Picture 1 (cartoon, rainbow, N blue to C red):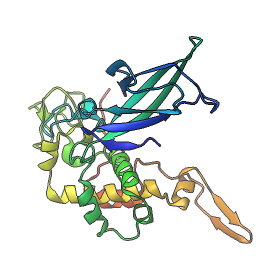
Picture 2: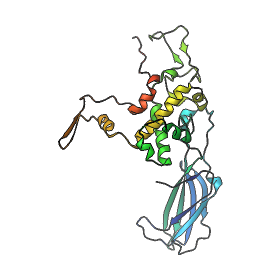
Picture 3: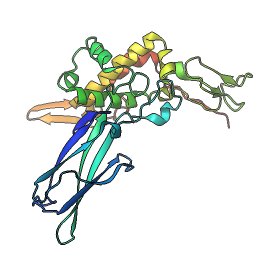
Picture 4: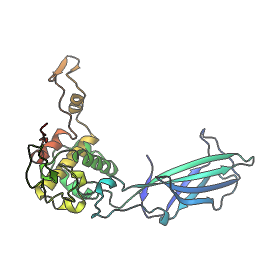
Length: 294
C-alpha cells in the first residue's frame, strides 16, 4: 500500500538506485519529473540536485505547491460526477543514464489525502467523528472495532456507495407521468422538496444525486437511519458475516465433522447492503416499480 501524506505539504521520498532485479546501478546522471494520478506532468524533467556518482539512493523533495489536490464545494451541483475524487497521487519518475548511455527508469509513488476525507453529503452520510459516535449506538461491530482509521474511512466510502443504490420513497422526484402510466396525473409531474434540481430527469430514489446542501435538508430521522446503516455496512465490509456471505453464494448445507447445518434451498435475494444495514432503513425503503400499459 502506498504511503500517504497530507495534501498541500512538502514530501521527501528516498528512491534506491537498484534495477528490477534488485541489483545496484551506477548512473552518471539522474533526472526526475513528477506526474499526478492522471499522468499529467506536475514537475518537468529536472536534474536531481546534489547527485554524485556512486550514491546508492537519491532523495527528491516535492514542494507543497506541487502537492495540492482538487477540492469540491459542498454546494457543487455535479455531485454525481465527483464520486470519490477526494484523494490525489504523485509519481516521481527517475531517468538514470550510465556511462555507456544506457537508460534505466525508476519510479516511486505516494498518496495525497485531504484533512477531512469523509465529507457529509459528498462521499459519506457523516464525518469520521460522527461515525465514531454513531458506532456507540450499534451493538456488536467487530469489523469496525478491529480496524484502523484508514480502513474504516475506506469502508465508509464503500458503504455509502452500496446504500445509494437502494430506492428511497422520500426521493421519488420529478417523475414525468405519461398517459401510458398507471400513475398518470394531469399535472404531468410530481416534485419532492428534497431532490428537485431540475425537471428533465427521473431520479426515482437515487440518493447519490443529492448535493450536500440537499442532503442536509432531508428529515433528521432519515439522516440518522442512513448514518447507522452506513456504519453497520462498513462493519460488514471490514468483517463479513461468514454465514450471510456463504448464503449469498448459494450455500445449502454446511458440514463440519458430525455437525451439519441445513439452509433453505432457494438462494436469498441479493441486495446492495447487508441485512443489518437494511434493517435501519426499512421504514424508508420502497420496492415498488412503475408499470406501463401497452
